[in-house]
Length: 259
Image (cartoon, rainbow, N blue to C red; front, side, top):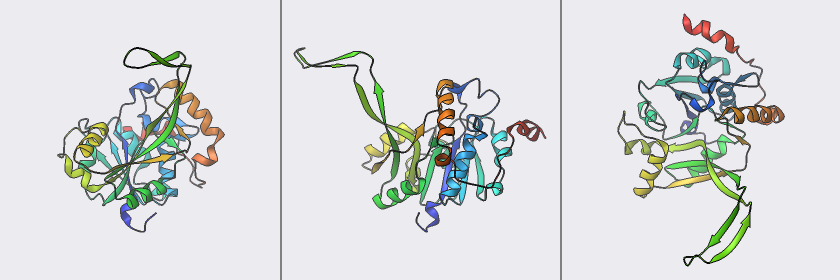
C-alpha cells in the first residue's frame, strides 16, 4: 500500500437491517451475525488491520449501539475506529457525505462481506489507474436448468444450448473512492451505489473494475449463510489473519448496550 495515509482509511457500511437474513438479524445487526466464533464485521476489521489500514469509520444506523459497544474505539484490534450515524436511511453512498476528514483516496465496503480479496491491491490498482471509482468484481456462473434457444430477427433458430452455464461479473461490495466523487451529490441526499455509478458515467468520469478470483461468499439469505459458514471453516487460515486477540462474547452485548 502507498505510504500516503489516503490509502489507509476505510469506511465500512453497517447501517442496514439485513431483512433477507432474518431471523438471525432480529436480535443482532447483520454485521454482528457470527461466522464461526466471531461476527462477520470482526473478521473484516481484522483483515483490514492486517492489510495496513490505520483508521476505520463505521457508518451505523440499525441497532447502532450494539456495533459501537462491541468495537468501541478499536484499540482491542490495534486500529482506530470511529462512527458516523445516519438518522434516516441515505442509501449505500449517501452516508459518505456525513463523514468529515476523508482523505483523497479511501476504501468503502459493506460490513457483511466475507472474502479473501487483497484490499491493499485494490487500493494500489485504483491509485495507479487515476479512476474516480473502482469496483471490485467477482466472476460468477449461473446455471440455467432449461434449454436456451437462440434466434435472429426473423425468428429463425440459430442455436440451441442445453442447460448452459452463463458467466457474469458481480460487484463484491468493495470499492475505492476518490474524494472528488463526494462533490457530485449533496450532503444528506439519498444516494445508492447504482445511481452514483450511472452519474459518474454520464459525467464522463472514470469508473474502473478490479477483477478478483478470490473467495467471495454471499450471506444474504439463511441458506447462503449456512454454506458460507461451512466454507469459512474450510478456508479459515485464508479468511482470518493470525492474531493473538481473542473474539469477544456476543452474549455480553445486550448487557453492555443496556447500561
